[in-house]
Image (cartoon, helix red, strand yellow):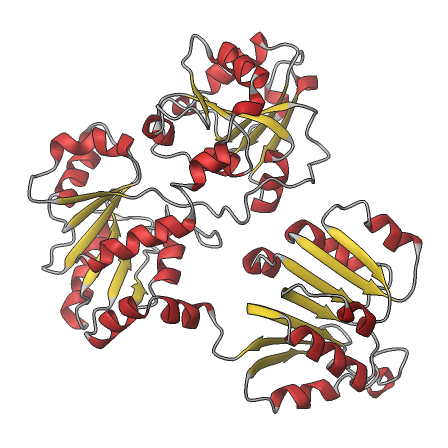
Length: 487
C-alpha cells in the first residue's frame, strides 16, 4: 500500500468489492472512498463503520449516473467481461483528476483456465485497447495469477505539470543550462525516507543528486571538487551547511543550516561554509539568531522553514486503538539530554491522573519506566507516517520539552492535525512566541501547569490555521523558487 501514501488520493473509487478486503486496506490512506458492488454482505456492511467510506449497492453504470466527483484513484474489478470493463474505464477516465491513476485487475491471467466469466473473463482484451490509445500511459504487471494494469494520462506527470505551472523558472534554467547539484550527506538524506532534500529534487528537475554515500562526510567536499574538474560545472550547488567542509569552487552555493553547533571544529567548519556561500538559508529565525554574529556582511541570508504535507497531516476521524483516552503526546524524541526526557518524566509524575503517549526514535521500552507509571503510558518506536497521523489524532495535546530544537517538524505535524502544543521557546515556537493560536510556551518549572491550562481552554486554539500559513510544503517550495531565481 506504499503507493497510496505516495499518491495521496483524496477521492478513491473501487468497482467490484466482493467482501471488501482491498477497500479496507485502502481506507486509512484516502480522504473519501467509494465502494460499488451489486451484492450485499456482512463484511461490506461492517465497512460502513469507517466515516470516510461509502458503500453503494448498484450496477456500476447506475453509480456513475449519479456520481459527479472527480477521481484521484480508481480500482476496476467488477464484471470481468471486456465490454463492462471498457465501460467502467471510460466512466472513470472522464472523471479522472490531473495526476490521477486507474488500476485494472484481471488483465494478464497466468493460464487459459482463468479466462472464464467466473475468474478473469476476457478483461485481458483491455490491454490491447489501452496500448492503442495515444493519450494514455499503461503498464501491465504479471502479478499473482490475474495480472494488473496501471493507467495514467500521457503528459500528466508531476514534472510535466510543474513545468506548465512554473514555465518561467524551467525555461530560464533549461535554456541557459543553469542546472544545479544537490550535495548532501546521508545523515540527513535518509534512504527510503522522504525528506526535505527529496522535495528539492522533485521541485527542481534540473537539480542533479550528488548525495554522499560515505560514512566519512569529510571526503564529500573533495569528491565534489574532483567532479567539478571533470564534468560540466553546474550553475549552482545546494548543500547541507554543517556536516562536511567548504567546497572550494567559484560555483554559486546555497547552504542550508538546520543544525545548531555551539563549539569545536564543527562550528568552525560551519562558519567557514557560511562565509564562502552565495546565500545561507536558515530553517528558522531561532537558528539564524544563533549564527548571526558569525556571518560576514556581504553574505546574503534567507530564513526558509522546511515544509510539512498539510494534505496528509490533518484532522481525521480515525484513531489508533492502542492509544489511551485523552493522551498527552511526546513526539519525535529520544532519551538523551537535549530532548528533555527528564522533564517529561517529571510531567508524568505530576499529572498522575493523565494518560501519555510517547513516540520514540530510539529503542526505549515501556519496561524502562517505573512500574507505577506503565498503566498510564503507551510507547511507539520508529513508526511510519500513517501510524504517526493516527496517533496524533488520538491525542489531545502535544508537549515539546526539547532543550534545543532548530524547527520541530513533529510539532508542526501535530499542529497540522489541529492538536495544540505546549513547548519550550525553541525552533518554530521561538519564531511564533507572540502568536498564541498554536498553544503556549513553558519551561522546566511550569510544564504541567501550562498543559492543564491548554487542556482547559483547548477549544480556543487554532494550531492548524496558525502554522499552515507558514509551514506548508507549498510555501516552502515558493520560497526556494525565489531563492534559486535570485542566484
